[in-house]
Length: 430
Image (cartoon, rainbow, N blue to C red; front, side, top):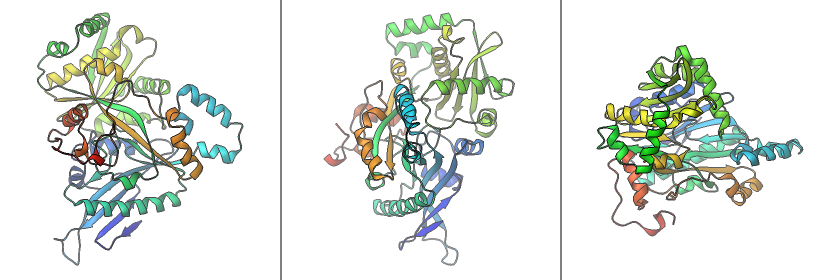
């Protein structure tokens, strides 16, 4: 499917995420958390019931030959299409009650709560993001978005989409968004993103010195209690893949997962498909009690999954053991940033992490349900465990004046700085 504009822009829908070259990826996504190989592996390994698409808006290259014009991508929108269980976004206690009530309602009412969902963003990746060419003018970007919104509306109608979301965007990853793209959406908090700078640290003792005395003492006590635990790093999970996948499913079922799980192939092949991917395995004797899946990129260590046995691992405080092991790994390999992912933010804050706020934006095609979202927002939205600055999606990152947020952003985009003056309509939400 392709649409064209009078100013040499065209929008094309692809039935894959892999619709741009590696060079184009680097130009449109200069500071994203995941690599294109990770996203390709996510798509290839797949999820039950999920289809992947991408919408690419391109501009004709003025330097190309008229008879064979070259199209340069300037806006890349990743999409995923899946059935969705709305009660999952409630608190688990509320969700179970809601599901019980829904079973007694007519099918046409139940469909409102089990819609077909079109997501903008990368499913089961570190955050949602839209790629864009930072060299194009604001006017061209707005025109590109107008074309993209029109194409998305047509696609949604063709696929009979009920619910559309922008999935887990943050102030850094939302820079391609404009207010018009979010018109009619209800924006809610989602779990914030934790990160820890390794700059200036040359030993674990130096890291411990950044923590309070009570926290240092507590961690050392936990490490002593885990002296029976053996840690093994590997890029070949084959001997333990059944246990790894079982631990993943157990941990996932205990959490607040919104979508269908990864397949076992994701874990079995990730070290072959994604450069830098590796496992830290935690054993007591020969028994695998936990695993940590990480990806070591040049300038960051990304923590993808930490999963443990709910009973057998409990006495050993393996989350804290794995945290210290990852800090040690970063220091040893001179990795400047530990990207610690979402959830457990209160614990991560005590361990020295800083945070980016994260958001999900919802829009339901049924006018009544879309009107209802803001009224029930407090029951739907994630309640962060730490104090966070609130950023308005769809406005420039240069609007950020909050020191805490800017400090977190500069870990991921070191050249970023706040302007001396900011128009009041672009300021951070009080």
